[in-house]
Length: 355
Ligand SMILES: Cc1cc2nc3c(=O)[nH]c(=O)nc-3n(C[C@H](O)[C@H](O)[C@H](O)COP(=O)(O)OP(=O)(O)OC[C@H]3O[C@@H](n4cnc5c(N)ncnc54)[C@H](O)[C@@H]3O)c2cc1C
Image 1 (cartoon, rainbow, N blue to C red):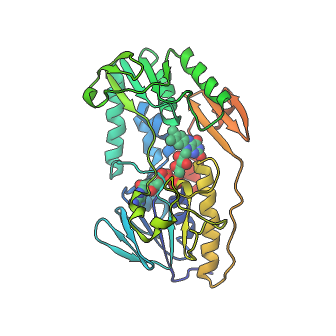
Image 2: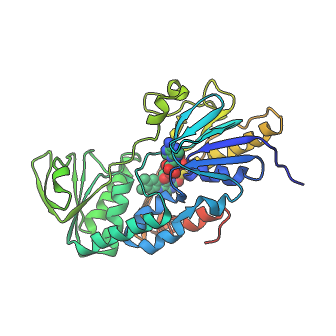
């Protein structure tokens, strides 16, 4: 028996959270998924794609593959009213329920083919250079240094990080283990300094640091983290619902505070927890249950109860450092969980796709 109800659910953002939500709700209501890219990207696998571009065939998934019953609108949302969303390509889409899932902002390629080309070009760049500077020692910079030093052990890799330790989003013990691993792989790590002349060194050269060091490198990768994709929201009616970090303030059911039909899921909301993709997916499953109930005229909303706090940072293909419920681990055990296939099979399964 079909449970489809003719209500309109608009999801803004087809990332980790938005993709799961669209997949889950598409049989229950009219789903509209708005995303500037025509594909969902398994974000945590992207550094592997930089050294092995063919890996990206599995990590870039067109929205039509997993949400074939949803209406896909390939554009950015630029405005919201009480009843509709406007997109950059001039469409207005009315909604009964709206979910904001815009996570982090990234100026990225529009089609899967373009993104595959981006990874291929970066691999070529890595292959053809002898020395590489990585700017930023968060998960992106550390994972990239891990991938390059594993697959191209002859390259001279230098990582410069402004903070006093790597991976500041986890505890000190995990930071130290990651740093020790990188040093073993001959990655030079410079902490507490920033690079001051990036813009004049687009094709490599002598990079200067705030501490007066000079680093010679043939190219650089900027890995300083992406800003939240909420700047556009400031000009909308939800501007007043943003906290001072640019996150949407939600209640325990993940409804934006003060609204009865607008939810926010994933990194964009202000739930106090580690911002991780598996938690973003949990948000979506909770909101999917609530929306299924609402479209059927019931008022019961699910509360989000949170999940175990876990972060795994891969260090090449066979190592990783992890913090799981406050405990630090490193070596083959966390690597077995993530570093082999970077959760690609698991993520694809969640979207109903084979590996
Ligand atoms: C290097 C690295 C490793 C990580 N490893 C892990 C890991 O091992 N496990 C884990 O659970 N998490 C991991 N994370 C964290 C995880 O990637 C994020 O928590 C997750 O991507 C958040 O999902 P999201 O859906 O909220 O946002 P995102 O995945 O950022 O998706 C946002 C989507 O919104 C779209 N969008 C943006 N603006 C607009 C707009 N105006 N209109 C329409 N669409 C818009 C974007 O195109 C994008 O598709 C890692 C992160 C990094 C950087």
